[in-house]
Image 1 (cartoon, rainbow, N blue to C red):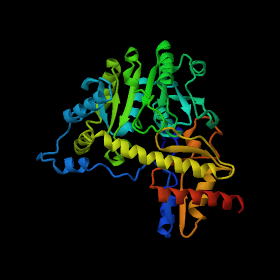
Image 2 (tube, rainbow, N blue to C red):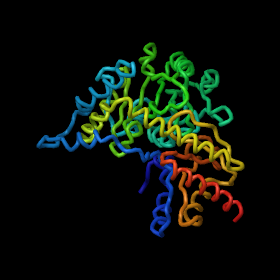
Image 3 (cartoon, rainbow, N blue to C red):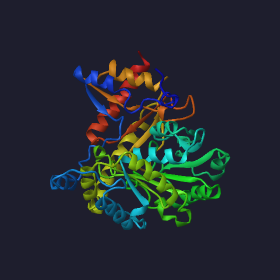
Image 4 (cartoon, one colour):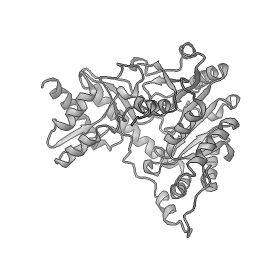
Length: 396
């Protein structure tokens, strides 16, 4: 029997494809410091669990396909607090930011349509765009320029008759780049000039460390028809397992099409919306505390990586990831070896090989993405293991 060509164009997630090796290593007694996935060890605010425990309806019925009224109200209130006026009609609640992206690309892409994406990028964009029949048109960035992609002329050089959208992540996963207001505005001007969608994935909005010069894309009212915001509670509130995201746009025609897919999957889970809505009542002091913690981890991670001979990386300005070029031949081979052959006092470390974060063949083969989501003591030990692993790997 045949399989679809679209599915065969997709690859396993670089964050998860080594899970079988990790499970085998743990079964053999190894302790693994997991820096491969953005799963914070920050505690989820108790408001989530209290709200779920307080749910008292006698029938767990289907929710509205757009989202529950209380969840939509919570999102509208949140955006109002950060100075962006959205109405409930501008928002669709989705099963995580991932489903928001899937639905969006299904709505805007035809076979062969192109999406300009600065690379490296969140690896699942490969899957979502290819599964929708689209093609990624990568814009190369480099650590020596802090992975800057706010280059209007370079963006315009990639635009052709097949281009449908420019997709950005701000703050950026996996590089930690953060756009200033002027930089975001310059990209929006390109999208407006060429009548393109500007997809702004802002799930790490609260985690910016060295500047206040950051703007939510929804604030730029002259590009209402262009801008689509992707959001999620996963990283913001350390609630990855809740799987509540949002597709947000004032483009009414787009949102009408997206609602078809929301109705096709019926609804997002009710209990998670109950808990997620409660999270939006958490005060700003929560974000200040978490941001300070991530800043400490960022500084430790960057200092430790910079001290490893031959490693090249840029200091991330936001989110909680760093890309690092290692003095090795192949990151996939290295990471498998770290899980199967390497250990120090019964411990090893797991990161994400970076080739899956690129669309350009050959890029990222000796790079890794590190998620600095562990407490300082564990993060320090993990990076020491990485340094020792590189040395032993190259001397085997």
